[in-house]
Image (cartoon, rainbow, N blue to C red; front, side, top):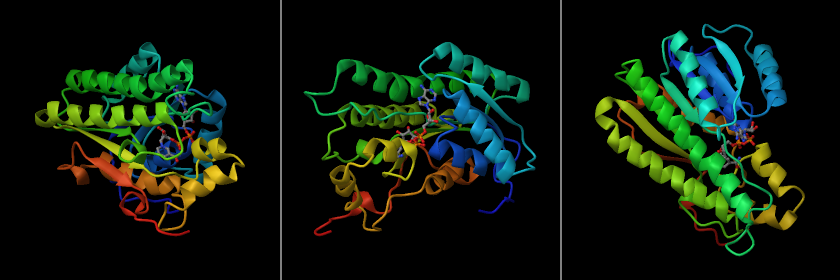
Length: 269
Ligand code: NAD
């Protein structure tokens, strides 16, 4: 991976939630490489420390700041204080609301436990709403004429998963609809909202969930015309585009990065 960029995010201040995980980590790397200052938020202190150490190995020098904060996105107070912290940097320009879970006990309409439904929605939907709400307050406070919000949905917001994961699917549909409406409401403010729809990836979120269940894995792999899961960095490249001014006329978009999965008519393995 290239360690020098072309300053596509020079001078921008960014927050990434779930920053220590697969997509979050790769996005942090690209944002830093392109000149942004990044505040990494994650619920896991251990993962944040490991991510920061790995970043300083991969990218020993960068022009922007890099800081971490332990934040559970279901706590509005913590999300608010992380966003307000960036006022000291000159205010927020970009937020990537990316933290999300898919719980092992997620299932169909009958067997999904209610506490798993609530937990999934609290993180995947309410957490994104809090990020958007406090980003908007920050854009107002700091009189931003342009800004970018990227919310992580999923291809399951667009197509039904044949292997049941109902709480997750419904939560990602909510992210898609919420993002689209925010894009319309704030279009004239210059604050762009887009959602990201990744296909199944090689990250712990999915790979841990699939584990050694061969059938569950096979049912997903055969969906790809490319014959493979995506890599987190392939999603991060899309986030970089949406965060940069290169996408200045892109808003309310369901940005699908899926190796052709949602366009495929699979007839054989
Ligand atoms: P990951 O599990 O590698 O990373 C998720 C990160 O979020 C972890 O570091 C975790 O500690 C953090 N996190 C979990 N709960 C949190 C909370 N309450 N507050 C703050 N941080 C929290 O997952 P990933 O694959 O990088 O997924 C990132 C996003 O992409 C998620 O929203 C996920 O739903 C979505 N997504 C993933 C896939 C996939 O196949 N991996 C596909 C489509 C969409």
